[in-house]
Structures are given as C-alpha cells and as structure tokens.
Image (cartoon, rainbow, N blue to C red; front, side):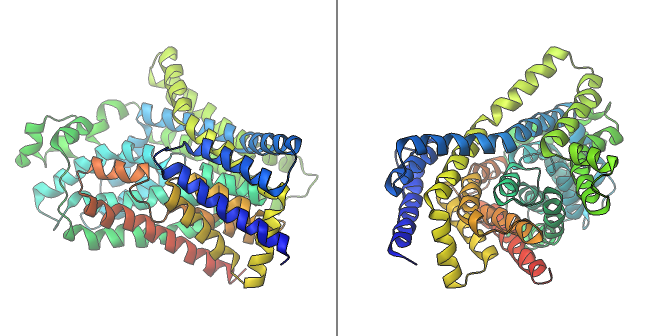
Length: 477
C-alpha cells in the first residue's frame, strides 16, 4: 500500500460519509443528486481533468441505464399489468385456498414468492394486503391462533418479498450487481433461488410463528375495509368473518374472476424461464448451434423482460376487457413510479465509473487483499452499512458493486455469490429511514417497537441468512 493508495482510500471514506450526510441531513438531498455531487467531488480530489470527469459520469450513467434501466421499465409495466388484471390476487388466492391454520404461513410465503419474482417489495405487499387482511379476519373469528393473526401471515409475506427483491434477478438491485460484477445472469438466478428458499423459511414462517403470539397488532378498520371491500361494521362483526365472503381471495373476486390461473402464472414466469433457458443453452449446446443462438438472444434481460411484458400485455391487458386507453394510462403510471429508482441507478453508475477511473477500486482491492477479508463478507458489510445509513438499498448495492468490481473475477459462481451477498446486505437493518418500514408499520397499525420486532427483525434475518447461504455454497464451489 503506497501513500497515494491510502489517500484514495481516505477519499472514498470521506465520500461515503458525505453521501450519508447529504441524504440524512436537513438538506435531505435526493440520493441521485447526492451520488452525483459525491462522484464529481471524488473525481476532482483524485485529480481527474474536467474532460475526464464529464466522460466518466456520462459513461457510467449511460452504461448502467442501457443494461438495467430498460429492463427495469419493462419489469415495472409487467408488474402493473399483473396487479391491474387481478392476476397476482388470483395466484395468491389459489395458493392459500385450501391451506390449514398451521400451513397458512407456508402458503403465504409461496404466494409472495411467486408474486415477488417480477414485483418490487412495496408493490407486492400492497397487492397481497387484501389477502392478508381477509385471511387474518377469518383466523381471528375462529380463534385458531394466539397473538396477532396479521403478523402470523405478514411475516412470511415480508420475508419472501424482500428476499427476492434483494437477492434474485430480474429485480433491479441484483441486475446492477450482475452487470457491474460481470456475473452470469442465469447462474445468478439459480444461486439466488437456492439461497432464497432456506432464507425465507427461517425468516418467514418460522420467525413469524414465534413472534406472532408476542405482538398485539390491530390494523385500522377503515384501512381493512378499503382493501377488502367490506364496511367497518361488517369487519367488527366477527360472527360473519367465517362465511364465504371472508374466504381467501374474496377481496379480489370482482377483479380476478376472468383471469385464468394458467395465464396469470405464465405472465409471471415467462421472463424468468427465458433467462434460465439461456444459461442451459450456454452450458449444454455447442457454440454454433442455431438453438443456442436463439435462446441466448431471447434470454438477454432486456429481451426476456420485453417478451414477458408483451405476453402479459395481450394475455392480461387487452384480454381483461379494459379499454386500450386505460391500459396505456396504467403503463405510463408504472413508468413514472420507477423514475426515481432509474435516477438513483444512473447516479450509482456514475459513482462506480469514477471509482474505477480514479483507481480507488484498485486501492480497495489492495487493502482488502492485505487484510485477508472474505470478499462475500466485505460486500455484504459495505452494502449493509450504506443501506442502513442512506435509507436506500439501491444506494448500498450500487456503491458496494462499484467498490468491489475490481476484486471480482472474470465470471463464474463466485461472482454470482457476490451479487447475492451484496443484495443480502442491502436488505438488513431496514429501519425508519426506509420507505418499506413505514409502509409495513402504517398498513398494519403497528407501534414503532412492533414494526422493529417484526419488519426490521425479519429483513435483518433475511440479510444474515442470505450471507450464510452464500458463504456455505462458496465453500463447495
């Protein structure tokens, strides 16, 4: 480690501190603005010329938006089609319709797992709230559970949604990691799913069963009525809660009746299957095979998400009976909802490129090598600290990816495991400066302490379990 390398490391530490300060101070900078300020500041301190700074910022932002931005836009529109058509409610209702009391958390985790593949955490939770409220009301009326029925059902839902959101492509965070660390997409999906299953089991149904009797959570009746379509007076009458109107999926019956389960599942799985087929083709077929060329093309993230979106547009959009104008307005709203995330991703790309062009990434590599830190643990820790400090999992992922990119190999399972570890780190310690924390707290009428014991604890369990799974797999590959 030379003196210049130590200066670069000090610059990086100061940049991270400034980034946290700008986002959390009274100024409340938008993360995109904060990332741009820090990127340009780091470039100036590290000695890049003004021409190099402009090129570095433009290249970093443009490259990552080209690789991730369009995919994210198609994913947002696909999620909106699934929600508007009632397809997600249909899937959830079918999964839990025949579940017993003890198996309900497992079925809820399954429903959230399927729905969480193409949807952001917040969107997936809002979509599943009607089901959670309806089933919880039935459980309370029957007196079959001690403590909070809402926490009993919400815990596996939160665990599954946040696990997929942080650790499994095609969500934007893992896609950023795949692009920045040059990991194979199909391998990352497979590794992410392998890590996700035991993580969800421990953090969701098992933890939910333990914590539910210890929390007295009662959502606002007006909010329950809004999501379930029942008047507050009806909700108070527990004697009617076990009738047919309170069965799982009843809240969305008006919208889901015309959605066939096959169409709903196909719309969710088309992009994921295309991406997985690409990996299978690259492993099993010769380079000159026409089938391999076709599957490689259709398995590209942009093409796979575009194909999934087009399939859902006709299968769920136009076939649902909605006017084309309404479908277009809904899709426009979906794009607007992710505009902020796209800007943060662009800012993160600029920051990553500056770290590379200034040599800071190489300095971090030298320091980590000298300290003999495990790369997966280092990536997890950086993402955890930045996500907790800034209130943005995306900031944690893009910054950790940029810092560790020089240390990553040329591909393979280890790079995919690093993507998973960084994503797991970004999930942990989800607290009051995260939007998801407040969504859960207000939706279920929790106190600050209750939200901490449920939502924050669940996401931190997911984070730790995800890292442990990545480390375990790393020991055998």
